[in-house]
Length: 432
Image (cartoon, rainbow, N blue to C red; front, side):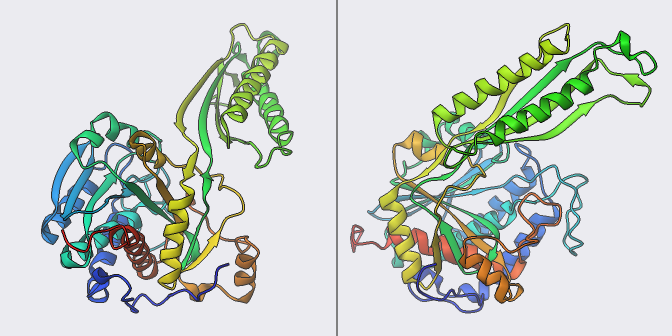
């Protein structure tokens, strides 16, 4: 890990970038906003209450040009600070179909929905940055575009905003910056130049058998048995990709079949998640999946070919190397502890779609949202080896929740510093 010690105290307001002025007294409000958003998660493309909260807060801050319903429920806000670079800052808004089990006093009240991935932190942090920038307009130069994006979890939100003309309707970016909270100690940022997060494809498989009474399996083609065989063969296929560096990952996340114990159903459904790191590996993996499923169905005498559908695809997320070095240098100079990942993360994001469409660099990083006091010496030693401590609760778990006090403070400060790396850089004119 890199040199300086992290600032883990949310009450310690750094002075490197002018807009941090008065942040300490404003943080409790953004922590309240975070808790409110956490209590009221909304699924992809249904983030109506979240978007309304964003608009209300931006209007309270003042100075921002606000546009609603971009790409469905997205919100875009523009703040102009004279001649200089156009910097896009992005936060995603959607929750997940997860039933929360954190026991927090501000836990989700929406049945079967939870902010299990920290998008509530992202929204609150970006709003905090918006307030800091508006409060000190003379401390920076350029144009900031705050993008509050819907539907990241299904990989379609960024594309929806692009299809709605976001690049034509708003100042085009010179750089796009984004961040994601994770189960790391607050004050730590991790990323890497080049590929930083995997490409992902969801694959839906419908296996067709022939149903019958449970007492007469000889009259049936059992799709549950077929599904079990397919799952085992797919996992063997996935294991055989281990020589790839990084390895292709394939997970069967759901199996749906039958309703009662004494009926052999007609169909079974598998939902799979594929993670790859280059286009050839993706093509080879999808072809292998298809080959295995078709062969197993034929071997078991299926009377109809399986249906195989690829959906909710995420592109490989690639950080621009010079921009990544610039961002990490800015964070390091501000006293943030940074760690360069040796390999890309296996999780996926649609964030990079914006910069790809705009033809500009982008940088995406992960930051700690946990109380550093929760990390003992053994946990710190695990982090220094590049591993998470045993028992770490990960994003997408029903038990995952960032620290309301530490995560929001870290998110505001990191994103503000990252933006300031461009907005106060040597290439920014001293006067508008």
